[in-house]
Structure formats: C-alpha cells, structure tokens
Length: 469
Image 1 (cartoon, rainbow, N blue to C red):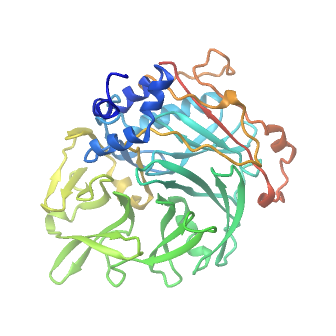
Image 2 (cartoon, rainbow, N blue to C red):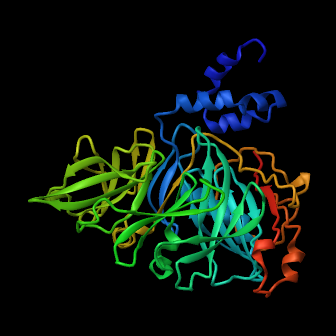
Image 3 (cartoon, one colour):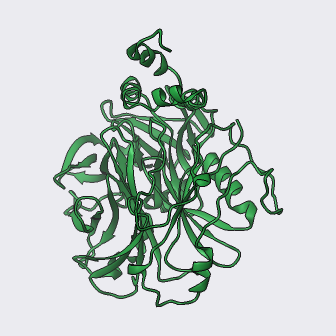
C-alpha cells in the first residue's frame, strides 16, 4: 500500500461495494484504519451521490413490504429484499430462543427498534442494524410488559455525511391521562441511561393516542399525523436534539382549508418530511407535493394535473433518494404505479411481483386493499450509503460491558432461513450472544410498578450477532 498515495487508493477503493470494503478490513490494522478513514468515506459518498441504496416501505403491523428497492451496486449484496434481512436476523437472534420479538420502529439511517418479550415475560428493547447484524441492548426500567408504556420511536442524530452520531429510544407512559402533558422515558446512547421528561402538547392526549405507533424518525425528530381539538389533521413533531429538553411543535397541513381526496400522511425523501395529496381546483383535480423546510413551513415543490385516469391511483410514498419519483397503488389493476413529477405521467409497473429498475429491483405488493386502508401506517426503512457502527455508550456513571462483548465487525454470507433450534445456545452457535449483567437486578424489582425510572441506572450491553465468513 506504500507504493500508492492516499488519493490513488481512494480512487480504487470507492469503486468497490461496501461488502468488499468491510471484508478487506480483516486483512490487517493498516487496511482497517485506511478503510475507516473519513477521507475514504467522503470520497465514497461523493462517488455514489446519485445512486440509490436499499430501502423499503413496510407495513408496521405485519412487516409486509409494499415497495422495496434492493440489489443495488453500493452494497454488493444478493438481490434480496430488506424484509428478508430483518426476518432472518430476528429469527436467528430471538425466535430460536423462544422469545417473542417484533420491530416497533424504523429509521432512515438503517437502524430498527426491536421489542423482545422473554419466556418469563420480561421486556427488552434492542437497537439493531439488520444488514450488518450489529445489535445493542437497552435495558428498560421495568421488568414486565406494561400496558401503560408505548413505543414512540427511535430518534437519531447524524452528521453531514449521514453517519449516526447518537440515538434515543423514546417511550410514552401514563398516556391514558387526558391532559396536555406527556411523560416520556428516553434512553440516550451518549449516556447509557434512561431519564424522564415531560413534554407539553397544545392539545389533550386523547387526540394523539391512536397515532402514536406510526411516528416518522427524521433528523433527530419524531413526526406523526394527529388531530387537534378541532378535529383538524396536523403534524406533531418532537425535537430530541435541538435543546437540552424535548420540544414539541404542531404544524398545520398546507391544504387545511381543502378537502383532500386521500387520507393525509407524510413520507420522507432526501432528508425532508414530504406531504402529497389531491385536491380539487376549479374544474380539475391536482396532485400537490410539499416539503417541510427547516423553518417549519411547507414549500410547494410540484403541482400536477390529476385527470380521470389517475383516480384509481392512491399515493404511497416518494422515493427516499429521488424526490421527483412518486409511487402509487392502482386499485383497478392491482399493481404499482410510478410517476416522475417532471413528466407528470403514470407508468404502470406491471402485475408481476418484481421488476427491474436502473439501480436494483422494485418489489410490489399485490394486496391493494391493505395498502388503501392503512396507507398512513407504513414506515420507510432506508439503509445508508456507508457502513458505520452503532454509537457506543460513553457514560462514566453506567456500567460498561466486558471487552469480550465489544463486537468486531465482519461480513456474513447471504441471509438464509435458519432452522428452528430449541437447544440452548452453545459455542457451536454462529451467533455470539452476551447476556445482560443486570439480569438479577431486574428480577429483584420485578412487579414493582412504583420503580422510579428517573433515577434508575440501566446498562447498555453491546454485542454483535455475527456469522462466519
């Protein structure tokens, strides 16, 4: 490597997929240092700035994918949907150990929040990257499944290159009280601790309760659509990184005075919260696309005539990497429809389950009724264009895991469906599991509903679940 300059090595390496780059880190420490350098990361992102990474539009209740982009050149992975990585990871990590696990939150930075219930009824939350199979356990400040606790979402903080700097697991409790004050439990990756925060909302909680499970994580905020005391639909946002304490904001939709054709819902594209709908303007209907700016104002980015041929097309989402590409579900032909806002024409993707695209593949769901009825209950899950590790807890007042539990990232073979395994984990198991140190501490307070979560010190035990190359 000494015979070539850093610039020349960068030009060569950025042409490799992330799978090859990750595997090359195992050659030696010098290679690992060079491949993890900020210089190579910025050069790689610049080289692939117009490419699309892996992403999916997933129905939260049953993990069904409505739209999925996979097989991209950035990662160099086999042409498999993101859902297969998630299901294989969860099955191997939890279900084979007789634990109940499900994803309760998705992000646009490749992280998911998993809720696991053990055979004893204990509840644990995990922050994981299903593609790299890195996983962090965050011990909740309770022992059993509590109905009063609700998973609000996973807020993340990133730098200008999209690298995750930190995350916060946000839970809602005492939501049954019909007041304007909400109590939140927040776990921070920076401290490794849970803390209690009270957030003041402009409306009573009963207006938000049904929508809490469908938040959108974006730029350190959690957003969701709710109704105010007047019954109007609004966007409720909580900023978890703008100040020392969470700040709540309510934004009215730009077409609040109109009667839209479809149920209001938001999507994410190129780092911005987007909204689109069809309203009647005079003698015609128009599809309007809006972007929520940093000043919390809606900016109209496109307005297209919506003729009678488009009446059967229900807006689903905007491409996370291309704000000019919109996806619809055609209720008449039961197929996916796309539109480029510059051209303004609907393009049927066909009635097959899959079709190729310029960079990867697109999967289409064939259950149109589900999509139409539950369009607001879809989550966008996006894998970033660079491979990074989940941030490490750096708190001095929280117990740190043993050095043996610090993961060494390696790549793995294509995900395969694991066989059911009812045997206890042993050394032959390809997954390395680090048990929690404070298991006894949790069991000692089991059933104590009056546990003060504000002063509870929870440990974040960090581990990876790795397969042999």
